[in-house]
Image 1 (tube, each protein chain N blue to C red):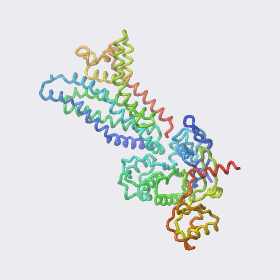
Image 2 (tube, each protein chain N blue to C red):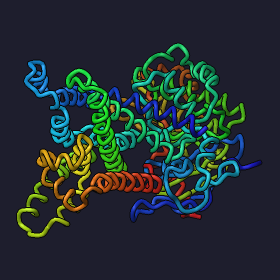
Image 3 (cartoon, rainbow over the protein chains, first blue to last red):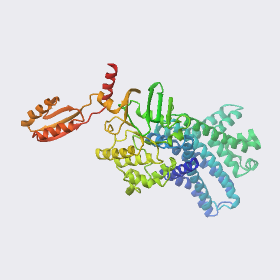
Length: 282
Length: 304
């Protein structure tokens, strides 16, 4: 019965998530962010050069990626704690489903719902706005792929928050604090280090790798063009952090960043499954 | 008789607080056991341990299967009705039943039968949030019955429903009991005595008494309280009748209150009417074990 039960619950959580107001609001905002109306106007007026897309996409990545966690963090962080507060979690776990089965269903349901938003947001934007051809679509697929990885990491962090917190408000506060930490505090910290310390590249690289939003942004930018081409034409696309990564890891940067994101994913997957399995459900 | 549930030396700590102290009791197949005790006695904690929702010390075995090691299998043998119905409110009765049937590994063909028996077939397309508290409780019991489990665990099943709902609910339980189901019912009300075979009384996480229902009831001096309003000239008649039956009467603001055995109250009221007393108003305060029952039991135990 395991597979069938999990499938039913995954489908339930997918449907439940997709109906959430936050997801709908985020989808609309994200779509408008992705189509970028000024670009659309310039494109319609033929003011943009024919090969504008790769450069544009790399800036689009830098613009949209910091906001991507706001999709998964609030929804994920409130998901389990809310069910615990209402008693639904205890009720569901009083059936034959195992804790791992429940958590897997929850994760997969939320991941599918949030991934749908990303794919539709970027994909639809690409379809209606960027006039992309098949080659450009490959770029979009790479960006969407990295966005899904970032989304999965944020979802796992959010679920972990939801498991360890006692009430919805704390979980939501902590989720927003995490987003703030990665986007603002961490960025200021990195700047501080680069400005104040000499020969601080290794610390700086480490800090970048410790920030999944920044790591995935750099990886996604590298997906739009080759690293060599970016460095040759417009290295500012990578930002200070991206250039440090490239100077430290060279051609291996893509692999390193990819492994970095996988470690983030794996680490939080282990943490949330282990903690959830051991904790009391009261 | 074979045991369907064995709770042996169950202990549980939340942080530094010990909430269960070596709780031991059993439920036999087809038997109804009441878990009685005031709020905070540990009834719900015991149930959560049986369902494998909490970590614990000691042993819990359901139908020969250890909860700690084979929790999923154990839960397949238990139908659980929580104290507060915690459903997915955005689903219809039918959708929720289908989801729960899937989670319990039950045949979906059972759903129509269960809804029919619970009197909910005609509201199966209604949202759960539209159901009355009595309907929700009947629905919860129906869901607990999915998969035909041999043991039903009900946590304060009638605490949130009106008298009509309670009567309907007890009728369903009686039917299930006759069908051979075993029950563990946690409650702080005494309305289930007619169903119970045995009683386990808890206080502050300890079993303070357990035994056959009749023994326990006989051992404690349970009293219901009736409040009567009668015409002034008939007050003396009430006093006389009460004292001849050995009851004391108190008069407060025109209400005559009499404490008496729950099983004798109907006879007493009948006697009043037959004597020509015109009862203008009546209130009945049923005995609650909330504080009194456990106190009585503890006193009895400390006195040996």
